[in-house]
Image 1: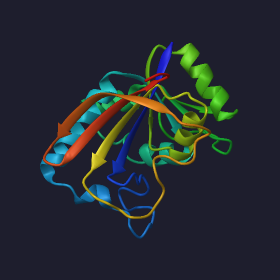
Image 2: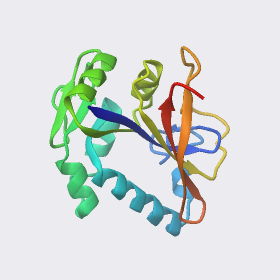
Image 3: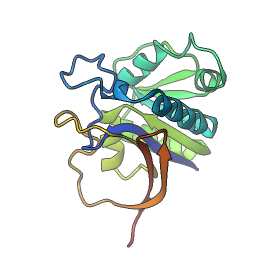
Image 4: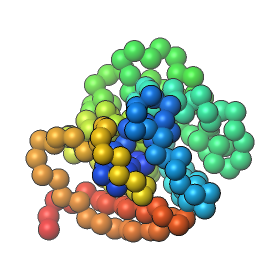
Length: 192
C-alpha cells in the first residue's frame, strides 16, 4: 500500500501561494528571498525526497509548471523526476507535457484512494494546493513535509483551508536546512 506525502514550501504564516512570483500575486516571490546556502540545502532535501519516492500525484497547474522546467534539466534529481511515474488529477488536461505522466480524469479523492492501493512506497504531492485540500478533507494524507521559509507573507492562499473536523498530527522530524529554513515532518494520527 502506498503512502501519500504532501511536500510543500510554506511561509511562517502558512502561505503557499506564488512562492516564485510568477503567478502575479502581489506578495509572491518569497521563495527567492533566501540565501544561496538555504537554496542549496533546499535542493538537497528535494533530491533526497525524490530518490525515495515511488510516484508523484499532481494537480494540472502544478504539472504544467513543473513540465515547463524539469525535462530540459540534467543530473540525478532531474533524472529521477523525469523518469518516475506522475499522475495528474485534471478534468481538462488532454495530453500531459511531462514524460511518464498519466491523467486521472475521475474524482480526485477516488483516484488518490485507488493509487494508494495500487502503488507501494511514497506518492508525493507537491504544490497542487486544491488537490491537497481535497486529500486532507478526506483523510488521505499520511504525512506532511513542510519546508518553512523565514518570511511572513501576511495574505494569500494558505496550506490549510477549512477541514471537516480536527486533524491530529504527530511531529516525527525537525530538520534545519541551510541558514534559515526548517523542514517539519508530521504523520497523521488518530489518537493523542
